[in-house]
Image (cartoon, rainbow, N blue to C red; front, side):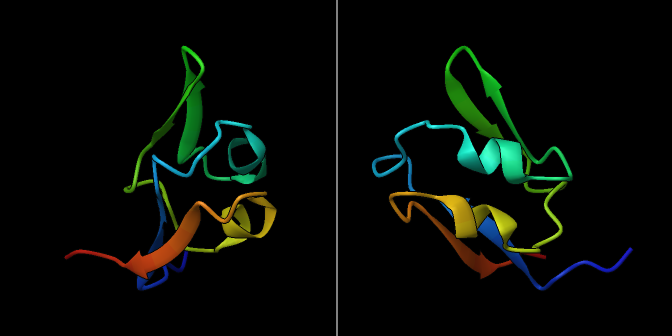
Length: 66
């Protein structure tokens, strides 16, 4: 499986915890736990699908740390 050089990053102050990005992530890099979104950057393949559904643009793509 191909990984991108980028991963998704969510601004916690902007995020409204709507769950759209969690539902859109095919790789389970995002889950809800006690009404809070938890993110596993190792599971993120950098496809960018999560940023396409965020209603408040809280998620952006950043360069993956090596």
